[in-house]
Length: 226
Image 1 (cartoon, rainbow, N blue to C red):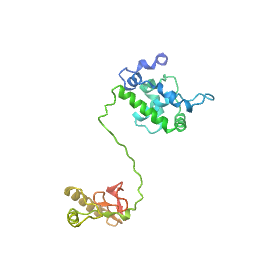
Image 2: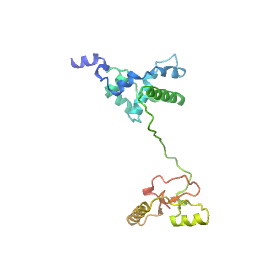
Image 3: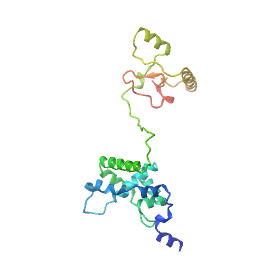
Image 4: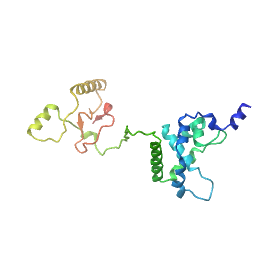
């Protein structure tokens, strides 16, 4: 009997009104999504995944820091707040992770950018985005530079002499004296632990690449230039 009543009960009533996804549902109108994706949806064939549900799922994926569509569906199946946010009752099956992946592949990047801009704008209107903090993301890109060509930067003493006599190609060391001592102690311990390892220990603070000065050693603590 208990299971029967739970299935028949509206899922929204089980989620507190102050829950994050419930507040998001009440304040953000996602109806803007359908006109954006309408040119990419066919009027014939099998019913497609509701575009509003799809965008909501992508938003949940971002907010919950999930990179797998399979994990996203698993979480939504277990999370009452997310189910209510998507508009699915307890007895309704959620979209397959394969359907989410196929829908993502069929839509152009411009649609995702437009949806993101619209959602952020609506959040700003609701006072949820203050704009006082900026976050910059980045990714490693393999440089077209050989580790074997790394060269040592100029010491402070050499930098002073070079400034007096004229410019030099090698950039000066900008690390503090204490930082350089720490690097020297670490390198000495590394050489003692692996005396037979080839190459030399390098750090971005003490070495640079003459062909591509912007290139950096990605993992300096364990990098050796042979």
